[in-house]
Length: 161
Image (cartoon, rainbow, N blue to C red):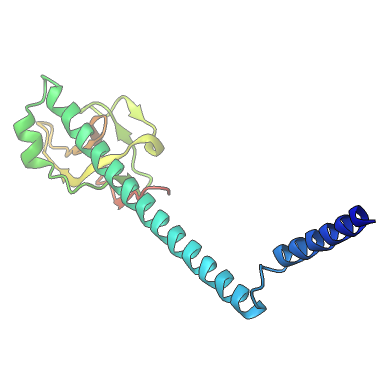
C-alpha cells in the first residue's frame, strides 16, 4: 500500500513539474511576452548588423576588384602605367555603358566587344584625334583600354545590380 501511495505522489509531482515547465516555469504571460519582444528586438538588431557588414564587405570587394584591374594594366608592357594612372583617375567604382555606343578592343575600332561585359574602372574618357582627323575615344576597363567611335555615356555599376 505504501508503494502505491509513493507511486501516486511521484506521478502527481511529475505532472506538476511538467505542467510548470510547459507554462514557463511560473512566469506570467506578460513576462513571457516581454522576453519574446526583447528577443525579437535583438534578432532585428543582429540582422541589421549583418546587412551592414555584408554591404561593407561588398564595397571592399568592389574596391579590391578595381585595384586589381588597375594592377593588371600596369603589367601590360605596351601601355605605360604612369600614363594610365595620370590619364584615367580611378575612384574605386565601376561604370557600365549606358548608351548604344559600340566598344572595341583596338584603336582602329575593328574588333567589337560585347557592351554588357565591359566594366569601366575609371569615369575618365580620353579623346585623342587620329592622323586622319577622326576622334577615337578611349576608356579604361578592368580588362584594358577600350575604344569607342562615339563618346560613351557611363553610369555607375553598383554591386548587386
